Length: 317
Image (tube, rainbow, N blue to C red):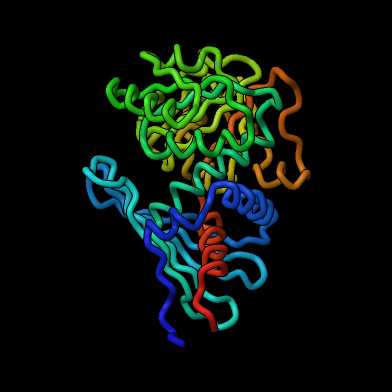
């Protein structure tokens, strides 16, 4: 027996953490975050240069699942993966680090799984038309995740690069999804029941005026205060559910811009998504509601996935 932590590289994470399991884990961990059973501090950032950030995200899971942190670099203009880092899990009883996992792959899977879990409780039950705004790894992960909570009869995709948009659409069609590449955001979203924005844009790409009544929107790509994927118009006419209110009030770029405009206030935010999942707060209340899930991503989500992997893959004692 060795005291060294179990190391899980990207390939091991990808092969071992399936989307169905991760969606279940997100459903389990988020009510704890909302009730404060799961512990978490606000993430901290160190700016390293233009488009370059290092972030520390600490958290603690309930019971004996463990505690730890995600350490990640975000390089917006890099020629490699945008997120590089590690998730480190500590044992609650001994206090020792027991598992270190590739943060990029954990993030790819659990971000899409969280959007699916939120969509399942907020989108209309008959929602079947998905719009993906963005063409990166998260776009691909999101269709895999969303298809597990709703039957998708039509999928539209848009990205700034037409070649990447066409390539993503072709790949998804080959995988069996009914996908159409779009030349504009408006074309992509005008008939959608579910919209996922998974971009690296710092300025809004989704005007609220184009979102029709009854739609559910997952705002995923903007994870800091200086970026926003939609405008104030959408927040004003929607019911906005944060993943974690303190984080969204501090780092949610869309919310901060809306408050600065004078047209919105933080007290208009709905309950956290964990409270909705637990049945302690209402979600969608009518077929015409526009619901928005503001996703920032949290240490307890990463740690929950790593704790499950550790229990599944740890060495025999």
